[in-house]
Image (cartoon, rainbow, N blue to C red; front, side, top):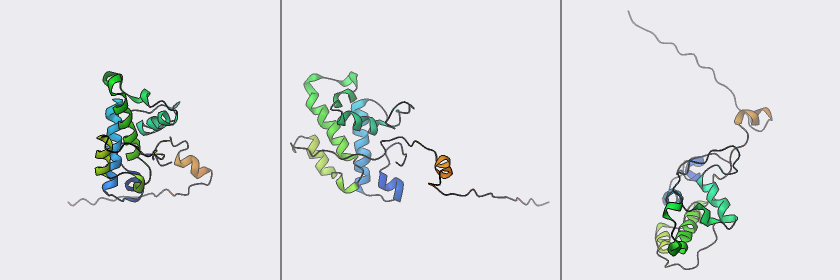
Length: 158
């Protein structure tokens, strides 16, 4: 998978396309950062499957353990359902395909609990670590590239 950190949506990172749904992606990452108390880019460990907060949240969601994402300093059993709803909405906002992400008005309705039944989120983008470097892939014949040598000449006047 393409390796990207931060708040950049996959369609912008890979194709340069930007829309309202790109902002929704960024907002979803922000929601997950607030709930977890961690930056999206704070997960870089060679033993971990996940590349970032997005991957970590997705793994916990699939394992049925979303509560483990919540920052202990803000954990309150009285607000358990609200916190789970924030995680759910955050995951809906970071779905890989822009058309699968909700609009901002739908996000607001979801967070206000106006929409009771939330759809199941699809897999987000940027969740797996890139295992092989481009050079390793090129040696295997999977990626072709060339190295350009450039000579620069600077002319100085007298």
